[in-house]
Image (cartoon, rainbow, N blue to C red; front, side):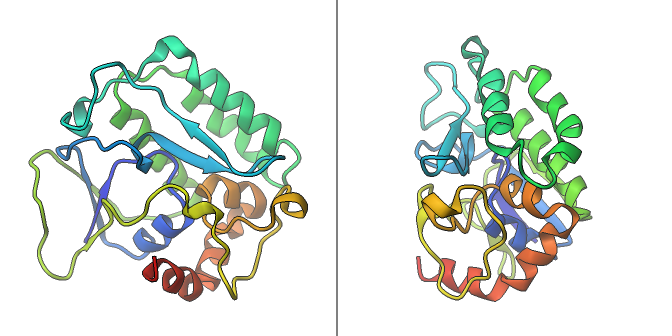
Length: 215
């Protein structure tokens, strides 16, 4: 079993971890933590990596359970995120295919952060053809039984910009300017490789996991 925070459009490493899992337990009871992936995801851009953050209502600090964290929709963040995605990826190989399927996530208003995050995960899960069972955890546990994998604090934002020695790059927009950014949101890989996205990830699984283990 995999235990994970509920995060938006998770990165490639996250999907490698859950791809072979029978069950993924999403922790709604853990406290929201700043400076983590819980309200942000990373893509590429003409001037380097881009962090797309979901704004939260004031007062939602470190002691709020993830299931209760409210989004500040007054900032029209969905419009800004969608415009950024279109601007960046409109020339990628598969964006035109996924565009009408993804757009509804940015047209529906979500009140709670966990709801949008879960919707984004389920959307990617469907596109990637993965079948793991999902469980929503509403009672916090500090640790889980031996044999499970706890991803709640496995990675910190910023690792997207660290090169991975020995990786086989896929065609990534702006790599001529930025170099290859190896662990962006799965959206980046999906728009580049389409139905072959998970195959690329699995081909590079050993290299990626070895790199993460050193962090």
